[in-house]
Length: 175
Image 1 (tube, rainbow, N blue to C red):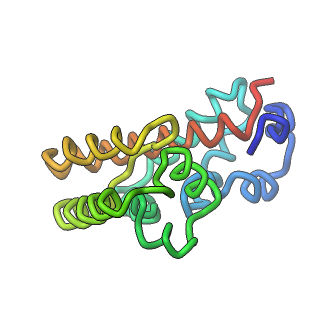
Image 2 (cartoon, rainbow, N blue to C red):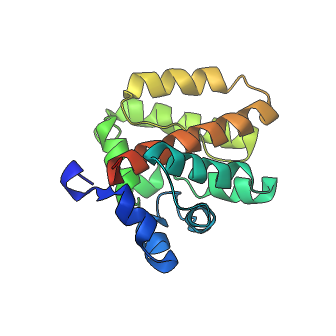
């Protein structure tokens, strides 16, 4: 979404609940429940407060619900990307990080790291790729594979909060 398509915070605060969820239900990957919970925290005084409401919805969810949210995310440079099955946000973010134009050996590295990560942790590697390069992502993969499962679960939730922030900053103006 471009700046010209941003919605003002005052418009966000005055839309009905169904409109809010229809517009922001996709911000958390395939998890409109996050927008439903954030919507109940309106009105928002600032865009940052709106972003915090989404993060609060995720942070306040049960561990099982958080795990469902983590698992709703696609692998980076994974099969869903190759089949063209990513959400528009994920496709754009991954392309911005160069994951849509990997060399064959880079694609193999991502495939192996995705597999190793899922084997160790039981959920996909989550990384807020906006502003990152494929090299930064590969380095994060290597580092985070050494994390303890509980630490990595919290890191995944933190990365999702970053993704939510990036997506909402693109969609909502702070006026």
